[in-house]
Length: 99
Image 1: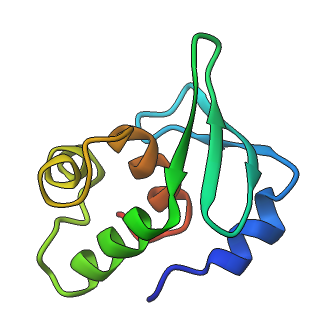
Image 2: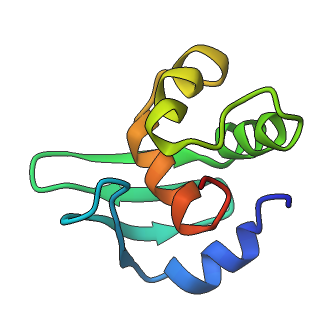
């Protein structure tokens, strides 16, 4: 299943919250544009690049990366980008790409 960026824009274009992988907390998405998902925590703000997420999804679909959310972050850091890997896991789990 390819990454549905248009779906992300519809769902979170003006912000929203998703549960974390472990549960009990949420990740706040402030916006989604054509290139980034903008995220916010009480202590920081950052952005997740569309090209990084698309690369991760392609690797998952090719069985080159795990679908296990707990193991995903380390593989993402080494195979895609060392940028907010846990936050990416939350997003991909929400989308049903990770188990």
